[in-house]
Length: 168
Image 1 (cartoon, rainbow, N blue to C red):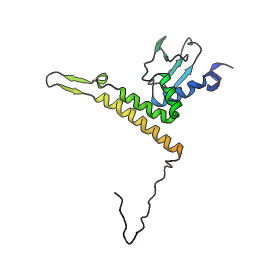
Image 2 (image 1 turned 180 degrees about the vertical axis):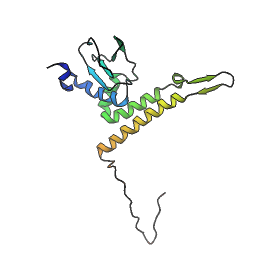
Image 3 (image 1 turned 135 degrees about the horizontal axis):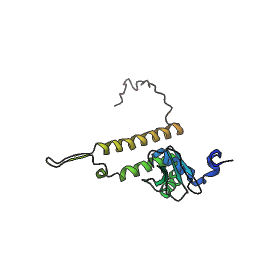
Image 4 (image 1 turned 90 degrees about the vertical axis):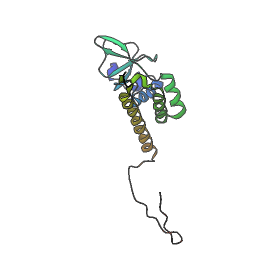
């Protein structure tokens, strides 16, 4: 059986499975739809795939060369958060960690020297992206835990002592 046909749990150390799942959900690294554990880097890699030997370094194949992917969160931190909170709640904390580490200067879009005009348009885009990921994960948690059935219904208010109270 080739590595390509083996189930993920047979070729990926158990501890990394949750780390990979969290990484894909929080989009770290960006632009990746699959993370593959390998004993050593293959000659070539697939598009949209990050490869790691489990050393915390993730690489992708680009124009005939392996390049290291920038990461916002280290594997050990992800693992610790998963052990402490569980996978989905850890993802919420991880996104908060990423948001806290965002530096507006890294996303400086334009500078005008005369009137000192600075625009952070792309910073807001990145911030909104992570806020939406956090909301999506929180919605998934609510659905899994049964706190969100997706149904909406009206509740009739019965008068108590002749008075119907109104909610605000």
